[in-house]
Length: 428
Image 1 (cartoon, helix red, strand yellow):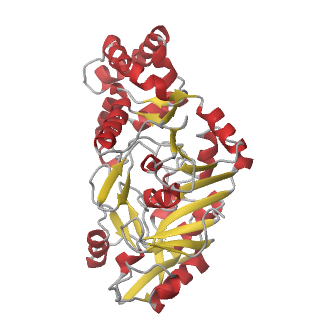
Image 2 (cartoon, rainbow, N blue to C red; image 1 turned 30 degrees about the vertical axis):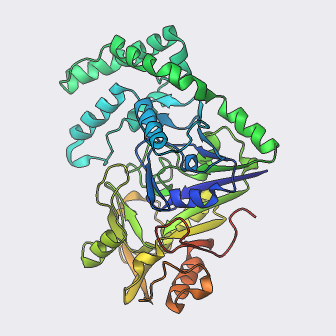
Image 3 (tube, helix red, strand yellow; image 1 turned 30 degrees about the horizontal axis):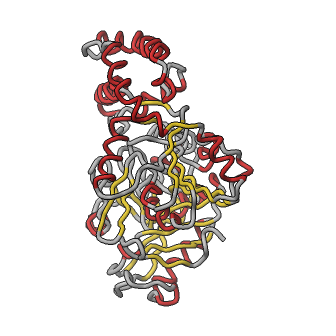
């Protein structure tokens, strides 16, 4: 058996979809264990580009069984739209399996997400407005709607009534919005039931049996470590656990079955939405990274904030997740720079700090301490062996490896599927 967890090492958008796709032909199951359609993966296959939001990237790999596990919150309308879009392009989506215990995003979750974010004013989190946070809040408050509830109309109605009993007071009396009718929500959800039914199963049991049978399972995390609700830059985080621990609770697979933990990290850093970002750039260098790296959100289209590589963040990720391997992406974006700064520590009120401060206030005010590395001008998009990279590019990768807490096993040198340099096998 082999169970591999793949997570983001920064604030998301590191290229996890490409890393998943790289492993796709060698795994049997790909599992999405957290988040919803509030993030996306872009996977390039030949001349085709696929933007996935809710579906696991493994759905693009023939023979792989993609799974949406219990830790995910599902907007069924979005799910069906993605499935239909892939089917129209000739992708076989019949293998998808969905956990009966996954929670659903409803119309009232999306409404609450948008109105509460506007209500926060200057204190906005930067939510996508897709209802993810309110759906997770209902899960924790034990008033959530699960996939299995679609198949019992009486139970579904009772749960919707319980959820809206409180939310309608909030919508009408606080936010001056109309009340949402129970019948409206129940009727909408029931229209999805029969199409969804064949996909629904006990995914925790399915994965347990798969591992017992010697299958290889890849757990694909949405968002990233620094957006984890417990270990990220709270409150500017997502509403789920995007770390390796989330793979366990979000899928029902025991922790002692995990064999390898892979973290995807960009050769620089990006972030979408509000929150601290010590290496953020506001000059031409930041625009260079944004333009050349095409740093715009897969789901939202929003320009991403850009900055230099942050080694303390990488070390934090390695420690929190137990990272065995890093996949370094977008090294090619740095081609053409004379000097490449790397944040090796922070200055916090005149004190050098080597690790991510536990205090949110200290992290917000941290000033990066940089070490500069010489750049390169050679085109590296066609390179497939580490020894064929320009000497300065090799030195840059080795320097990052030395200060990031784990080995750099794979290096992305271009957007194409095959544009990778493999230094260490991610499975063997």
